[in-house]
Length: 70
Image 1: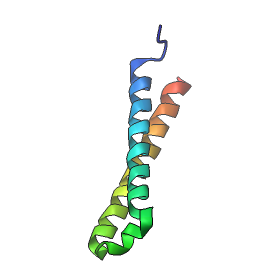
Image 2: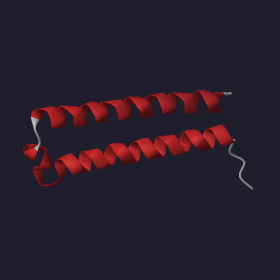
Image 3: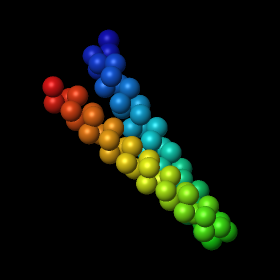
Image 4: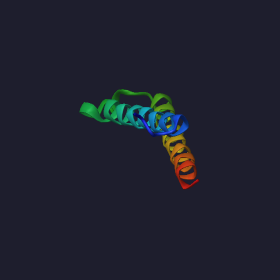
């Protein structure tokens, strides 16, 4: 029997998804120096996306902490 409330499970899944996306972007950019072949605009967009995902992770963690504190 799963005793984790549905909203907590959903938050955990969101965090897992966001972390996976962030890791995938870092691996893609860093593998064999792939970032060197990107235009400045593309690299900037990729880094902006990474920043967005990290902010999303931070917000999801804060919601998770708030939910578990109740």
